[in-house]
Image (cartoon, rainbow, N blue to C red; front, side, top):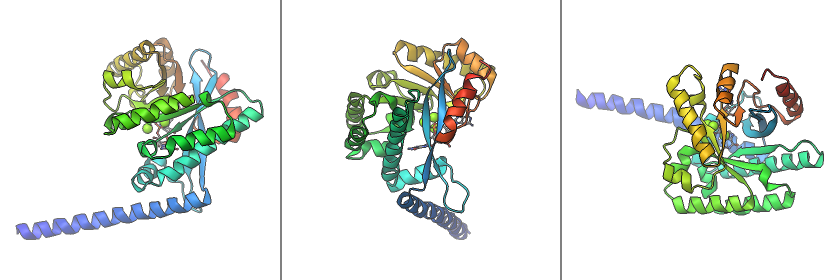
Length: 284
Ligand code: C2E
Ligand code: MG
Ligand code: MG
Ligand code: MG
């Protein structure tokens, strides 16, 4: 009886694994192809200064739409790209793309917008990462202070190579790149770590913003995060702001920047100018 149950169990798991492995494999191959064909796109979501309602920068978010297929969200393909190491090549494409965008803006005398890109741990740990960044920036001659790297809190606290990670961050900081902790509040960082990391920006995770202002616990947490950032001399961004009520609440409690569907979804670069105008005219 037990033997049969365990045999069935085994069959069940092995079937599930096969299906999952197959799915992974399909995406992995698709990604390899996409890298070759440069089949990606960056879309840009505005970050808005809460007091002036000016767009001060954008976050670049990666999009992959395989030919003839529906687009696959980053939450699905990024983890696979990380596991397989393909994130290195994809990440390099993202960095170069963001830098060329900065350069285009610089050449056309547009307003000065910063670009934040998401950088995964696997990239930060890769051997030639900082060199690659340095060379790309030099070649393009853009103001490095306009580039920001977002790293998740989860990664920053879970890395076992704390020293190497810190050294990399210090090097990036010296280059003039701004550093942000993404999804802040979801990753158990300690005050000791926060104090020691060369970080400019805290991005409060959307999950704390969702039920503002009604959720009194989230409100208390958000208020203390804003305070913490203020006291550490960091900039604070609220992620995933969808309603006017949330915006008012965040303004009342002194958040610096907000990002979210209330002001704008991520848009293609051609749409950005128009989006920025619309944001200025939105209800404050
Ligand atoms: P993230 O860096 O925390 O980015 C914020 C995500 O929330 C984005 O999803 C954005 O479209 C979404 N978002 C922004 N405002 C709102 C809102 O008001 N409501 C809701 N419901 N969602 C909102 P997206 O673009 O699907 O990206 C998901 C995650 O994938 C990112 O989370 C980031 O961790 C990762 N990712 C995206 N692009 C890249 C990339 O180029 N490299 C790496 N390593 N990771 C990336
Ligand atoms: Mg991010
Ligand atoms: Mg985030
Ligand atoms: Mg996230």
